[in-house]
Amino acid sequence: MKHIKLTLQYDGTDYSGWQVQVEVATIQGLLEKALFTVTGERNRVTGASRTDAGVHAFEQVAAFMTQSNLGPEVFLRALNANLPQDIRVINADECPADFHPRYSAKNKTYSYIISRTGAYSVFLKRYSLQIHSQLNCNAMQEAAGYLAGRHDFSSFRASGCSAKNPVREISEIRISEFERTGFMGFRFNAPVIKISIQANAFLRHMARNIAGTLVETGREKIPPEKIKDILKAKDRRTAGKTAPARGLFLEKIVY
Image 1 (tube, rainbow, N blue to C red):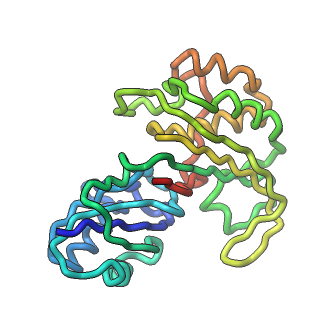
Image 2 (cartoon, helix red, strand yellow):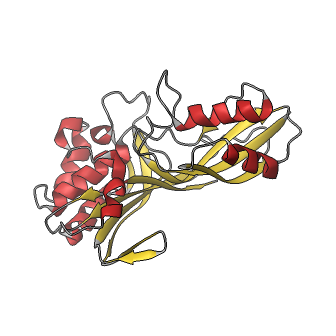
């Protein structure tokens, strides 16, 4: 029995998230279907992050057990031959039996992309939140500073979150501005803001709820210092709206 680790990229626009669901297309479901085609085995694939519907990934990590004699490189080519073009395996390796994509991770980084003007590139529509007014990025960074560290993030998790412990630790949260952006090797005069959040783990919708709240701060509707009160409240109703899924990317996982 071998344990295979996969690194994947995907455009989540047309999928109902990572986790297998009945009668809808998901990343995990299509990956398991491709594995069955390749090996004839009903392999259960475990993912590092259960991304929501519409969320994208630059670096999702998954693993599965197999009795197949195929090597990692063969798995990479065979799976890509049986997956849609918007889901790609970019690396495959054999890993220790005790490796777990989710629980072995030291931290994960999610990034949220915001198009700052009405003159955004049409190619960013699927991958960003469009804001037609200027945002105060200094206020956003100040607010983000209050979120750094170890906190109870109950005010930033979805009502259906099943995590028993709402405490998470954000090791870095950064607001970056770019006057130009790249896409498929092209450069566009489309100013964007990138919110990057690195944490030991994330609650359901935590990254999107933080992004939505920081956008409200950028619009000067939520003062930066108000973040302290929102954290203390432990009440989802006190924070900003959930930002749309299309702007969120699972960017990096560190083991």
